[in-house]
Length: 88
Image (cartoon, rainbow, N blue to C red):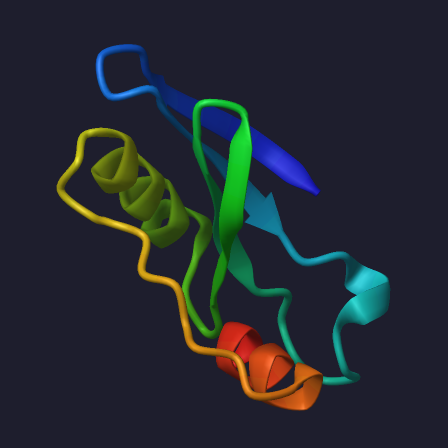
């Protein structure tokens, strides 16, 4: 679920702050927050911050659009590996 969006026109960057859907959260755990990063209209990927709060994700989004934080692609060897890297 998208909670907010940060943008920077100069760098053509955008980041959506996300909250994990309650139906996707294992019993007894709190939902994770994360950000979806874009350059222009191209979605680069999502980073989930397990155990962090909404403010942490908002700060990460702001850092990304200001160019302080950059997106680094993870070399993917298989779907299970990819999911583990994004969620944990």
